[in-house]
Length: 129
Image (cartoon, rainbow, N blue to C red):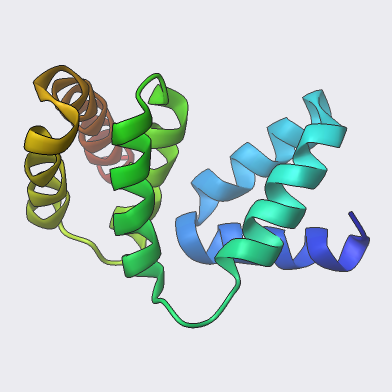
Protein backbone atom coordinates (compact mmCIF):
# COMPACT_ATOMS: atom_id res chain seq x y z
CA UNK A 1 0.00 0.00 0.00
CA UNK A 2 1.25 3.45 -0.75
CA UNK A 3 1.33 6.28 1.78
CA UNK A 4 -1.50 8.10 0.01
CA UNK A 5 -3.84 5.15 0.61
CA UNK A 6 -2.74 4.94 4.25
CA UNK A 7 -3.33 8.66 4.77
CA UNK A 8 -6.74 8.41 3.13
CA UNK A 9 -7.56 5.40 5.31
CA UNK A 10 -6.53 7.23 8.48
CA UNK A 11 -8.67 10.21 7.51
CA UNK A 12 -11.62 7.91 6.85
CA UNK A 13 -11.22 6.15 10.20
CA UNK A 14 -11.07 9.48 12.03
CA UNK A 15 -14.19 10.63 10.19
CA UNK A 16 -15.98 7.39 11.01
CA UNK A 17 -14.93 6.82 14.60
CA UNK A 18 -13.02 9.80 15.97
CA UNK A 19 -10.53 8.94 18.70
CA UNK A 20 -11.56 5.26 18.71
CA UNK A 21 -10.45 5.01 15.08
CA UNK A 22 -7.15 6.74 15.83
CA UNK A 23 -6.43 4.36 18.72
CA UNK A 24 -7.06 1.32 16.54
CA UNK A 25 -4.85 2.60 13.72
CA UNK A 26 -1.99 3.46 16.06
CA UNK A 27 -2.12 0.09 17.83
CA UNK A 28 -2.40 -1.86 14.59
CA UNK A 29 0.51 0.02 12.99
CA UNK A 30 2.65 -0.55 16.06
CA UNK A 31 1.88 -4.26 16.44
CA UNK A 32 1.24 -5.42 12.88
CA UNK A 33 2.30 -2.84 10.27
CA UNK A 34 1.74 -5.17 7.31
CA UNK A 35 -1.83 -5.92 8.40
CA UNK A 36 -2.41 -2.21 9.05
CA UNK A 37 -1.51 -1.46 5.44
CA UNK A 38 -4.30 -3.74 4.21
CA UNK A 39 -6.92 -2.85 6.80
CA UNK A 40 -6.30 0.90 6.83
CA UNK A 41 -5.00 1.50 3.32
CA UNK A 42 -7.29 -0.83 1.41
CA UNK A 43 -10.28 -1.35 3.68
CA UNK A 44 -10.74 2.25 4.70
CA UNK A 45 -8.59 4.20 2.21
CA UNK A 46 -10.11 2.46 -0.81
CA UNK A 47 -13.41 0.78 0.09
CA UNK A 48 -14.89 2.96 2.84
CA UNK A 49 -13.71 6.15 1.10
CA UNK A 50 -15.74 5.35 -2.02
CA UNK A 51 -18.69 7.58 -2.81
CA UNK A 52 -22.16 6.27 -3.55
CA UNK A 53 -23.26 5.27 -0.05
CA UNK A 54 -23.35 7.42 3.05
CA UNK A 55 -21.25 6.46 6.06
CA UNK A 56 -24.49 5.55 7.84
CA UNK A 57 -25.48 3.20 5.03
CA UNK A 58 -22.01 1.65 5.00
CA UNK A 59 -22.20 1.04 8.74
CA UNK A 60 -25.66 -0.54 8.44
CA UNK A 61 -24.34 -2.93 5.80
CA UNK A 62 -21.18 -3.68 7.74
CA UNK A 63 -23.04 -4.45 10.97
CA UNK A 64 -25.38 -6.79 9.12
CA UNK A 65 -22.50 -8.59 7.42
CA UNK A 66 -20.53 -8.94 10.64
CA UNK A 67 -23.55 -10.34 12.50
CA UNK A 68 -24.08 -12.85 9.68
CA UNK A 69 -20.43 -13.95 9.76
CA UNK A 70 -20.31 -14.56 13.48
CA UNK A 71 -17.08 -14.61 15.51
CA UNK A 72 -16.48 -10.93 14.75
CA UNK A 73 -16.74 -9.43 18.24
CA UNK A 74 -13.79 -7.05 17.86
CA UNK A 75 -15.00 -5.79 14.50
CA UNK A 76 -18.58 -5.36 15.76
CA UNK A 77 -17.25 -3.46 18.76
CA UNK A 78 -15.47 -1.00 16.49
CA UNK A 79 -18.34 -0.67 14.03
CA UNK A 80 -20.92 -0.08 16.78
CA UNK A 81 -18.74 2.82 17.96
CA UNK A 82 -18.37 4.03 14.37
CA UNK A 83 -22.07 3.74 13.59
CA UNK A 84 -22.98 5.86 16.61
CA UNK A 85 -20.23 8.35 15.70
CA UNK A 86 -21.62 8.81 12.17
CA UNK A 87 -25.14 9.39 13.46
CA UNK A 88 -26.97 6.09 13.70
CA UNK A 89 -29.14 5.87 16.78
CA UNK A 90 -29.25 3.05 19.29
CA UNK A 91 -32.80 2.38 18.08
CA UNK A 92 -31.62 2.03 14.46
CA UNK A 93 -28.83 -0.34 15.46
CA UNK A 94 -31.30 -2.34 17.54
CA UNK A 95 -33.59 -2.64 14.52
CA UNK A 96 -30.69 -3.79 12.33
CA UNK A 97 -29.91 -6.53 14.83
CA UNK A 98 -33.54 -7.59 15.18
CA UNK A 99 -33.94 -7.65 11.41
CA UNK A 100 -31.10 -10.20 11.24
CA UNK A 101 -32.85 -12.78 13.48
CA UNK A 102 -34.77 -14.70 10.78
CA UNK A 103 -31.76 -14.70 8.48
CA UNK A 104 -28.82 -15.52 10.77
CA UNK A 105 -30.47 -16.80 13.95
CA UNK A 106 -30.95 -15.72 17.52
CA UNK A 107 -27.51 -16.72 18.92
CA UNK A 108 -25.56 -14.45 16.55
CA UNK A 109 -27.96 -11.59 17.20
CA UNK A 110 -27.74 -12.10 20.97
CA UNK A 111 -23.96 -11.87 20.69
CA UNK A 112 -24.41 -8.63 18.78
CA UNK A 113 -26.63 -7.20 21.51
CA UNK A 114 -24.07 -8.18 24.16
CA UNK A 115 -21.37 -6.29 22.27
CA UNK A 116 -23.66 -3.31 21.65
CA UNK A 117 -24.41 -3.17 25.38
CA UNK A 118 -20.68 -3.06 26.17
CA UNK A 119 -20.14 -0.27 23.62
CA UNK A 120 -23.01 1.78 25.02
CA UNK A 121 -21.58 1.37 28.53
CA UNK A 122 -18.14 2.49 27.31
CA UNK A 123 -19.66 5.54 25.66
CA UNK A 124 -21.56 6.44 28.84
CA UNK A 125 -18.32 6.16 30.81
CA UNK A 126 -16.45 8.28 28.26
CA UNK A 127 -19.17 10.94 28.41
CA UNK A 128 -18.98 11.13 32.19
CA UNK A 129 -15.25 11.90 32.23
